[in-house]
View 1 (tube, rainbow, N blue to C red):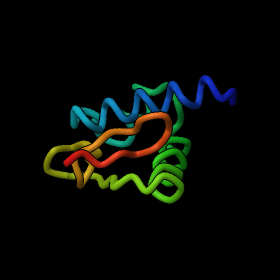
View 2: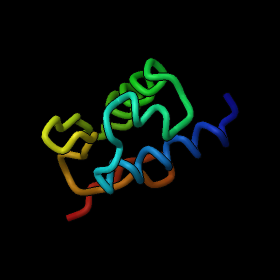
View 3: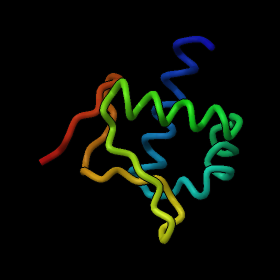
Length: 80
């Protein structure tokens, strides 16, 4: 995958998470035009490599950040 495509997917996922509108993992993968397995890998990378505080909230049916913030220049910045 090209770097541009990867960055675009990360930015799309970040926006969906901030809006708390990812839907289920299946729905989120479909919104990003990737497989569910690829979605899990992407989220795992963001959590491990970029320290993004991402969890899946079942009651909201969305991935969410546990701290307010966003991914900027492929770095997660916590907002105060």
